[in-house]
Length: 530
Image (cartoon, rainbow, N blue to C red):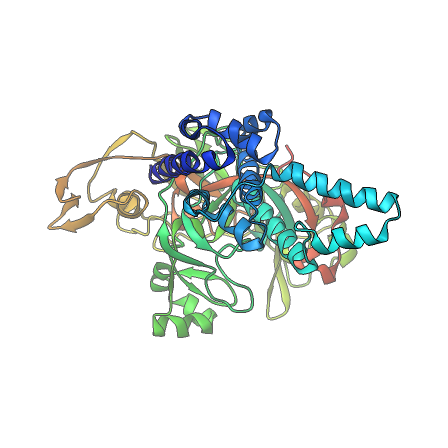
């Protein structure tokens, strides 16, 4: 709503500025106030054909068309410097008002026609071999730009266009971890569509273009959390279905410790003291309470498979997902961890041929102890005489969502649930046995004031025994089921955290490094071939 109000107010101010500016170009002032007609007259003033105004009705394209018209307008009033063009693009109503109320400013004529006429004079002098006239025209050329300005404008336009496309249409991502190994490999570079699941308008207003949340080498955040805009999403091209790949902001990544290895949530560090022993940087940051608080759209990006949607009931039994009581089809390259005997000796060339790389390999003190394998890879190793044993995942309800061993005992990575995925508009009863599932939804994801006192749940100042969800939620899991930190670890993915749909792999390096070579066979493959 805030964005809509801002655009509405800006349009009114633009119309008013045109009302005062039009008379200087011999156009009736009232035409500046008439929607549609004001843009048609604007086209006449700058020398564009009248149909050009219709391009303003095309989403995305209209941003570029409007910016060009703003620049042409100030140039028609002999404001030819870079600062004038920049001011017009930054906020046209202010620049147009300045032109309108400054008595010294006057309209020269449609800049596009004037520039074309001047260019013809230069061409005529060249064809007539009139060096004197040509030199005079070049010296007096008001439209001439320095090389520096040409570079600045080119760079600005390239960055603006790239940032715009990245923000609203398509963004490039790289797979950094093996959580989707089998389907997507570490080192795969993906293009992700932001339109398929609905374009999410920017929420963080001040940021470094083309960066997500950290400035490389400096290690500092690339944005300012304030001012911020409210969440809004445009109409989706398709809905998210179970088995779709999704890119989303890490739901629990609002308060994080960041080390050279990875990001940890504050609650992860509290619940899992072994993490501090494994990462000395984390221990130091926890002791200093050196964590960062990030807004929704600046949380880390994750890519997983949506295995359940709003209103679904999910249950994992012996590694098999059941959705609403029915067994689901597994991804073709779904992986599990298999232990191997220490005497195993398979040539590396064969492992590579079978698609078993370093990212699939687990070692202990330099010795191979097992592999993450899909069904076909498992079969090939067994056919080669290797004895494989599936790794038994122990129950650890404290480490797994909802981190409540008392009410959800015995849950493990391979035997999890059942759990119901919240749906917008659905209402649940709240009690001590299920509040762990919904506490973060109520308090964080849906921005309610929440506290628990004397066994009661107080939401926005009122004692509540039930709650109605404001948005849809999803359940996301990696295809590498034994090596994926996913919804089993941190819970539901809110709809407002959804970023987009992976389209295809545009580049791929072996094991995540260009020095290991390029996976040419993966380039231009679908991100999720089915």
